[in-house]
Image (cartoon, rainbow, N blue to C red; front, top):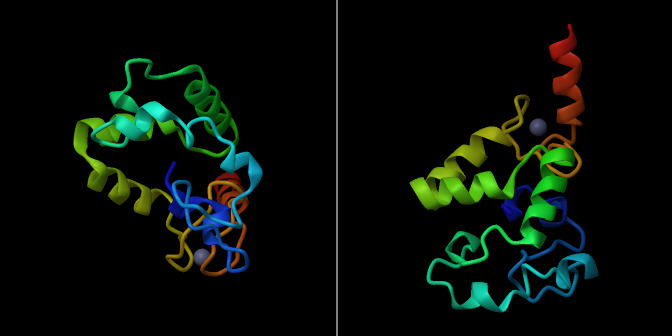
Length: 131
Ligand SMILES: [Zn+2]
């Protein structure tokens, strides 16, 4: 998960510090996440799930399915890019993918809102492509 496109990370008030932080504002859903608390990933050299013998585990597959269906992104695809091309390549791709066409701000995958100009960009994009 790229925290940079998460609505909890992007918001001004009670801003989350990221999945791997000890954040007081982190939602319990995130705090109790089995991937976040996975013991195996802590022993990985890379810090990424693809190194695990169980990759992709049941929990990761469930999360990926939900994000692919609802939030226009895939954790498994991201991990594959990191494994084959490196983290820099993923971040460059993410920056392009989630850049607001109006102001260049960051769009959250969770709500489609640009945190630069406040527009509902994913709705906007759908509207534009229908014309
Ligand atoms: Zn914008």
